[in-house]
Length: 199
Image 1 (tube, rainbow, N blue to C red):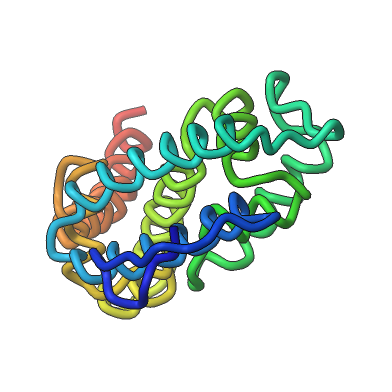
Image 2: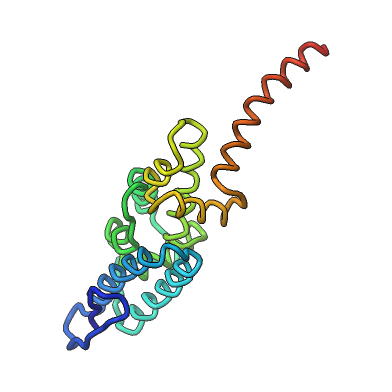
């Protein structure tokens, strides 16, 4: 099956060698476009992503696409883990797809997802989101840039996208979190001085 550029439309495709890999790559690209189109509803987008990873695994199993050099049952090899973590950290401002990350460590997307879950206890997509939230916190603490710029630096669509992801995972909005951190900074020196005076 071949996906067209328009989400939701597919066309029949004759089975050829490597069709499974083409299916995975095409579907991943299509999903990225779909996620962008429904960025106003990130909860639904995340659900689609999780279902997509399951679909990749099933497709790979049915196709018998197994590489003898892959050992996903025991997680990522140390070099694979280090390469992925460094790449994600260095490229958070860019699009990071499962197919792209899998290619970095020479695994199929489905095997990569399984090995990643064994090793890091979450999906590649969820790990990238966690890293983006951590980067956003660091930028808000260490710089005075706007939330819109923070979102851009973290690879998110806009400030609204940042706010939705941040609120869902941290429990408050980025602006409220930033104000709270600034207030703690102001109160901490005053508290230190009162303790010194009391002694």
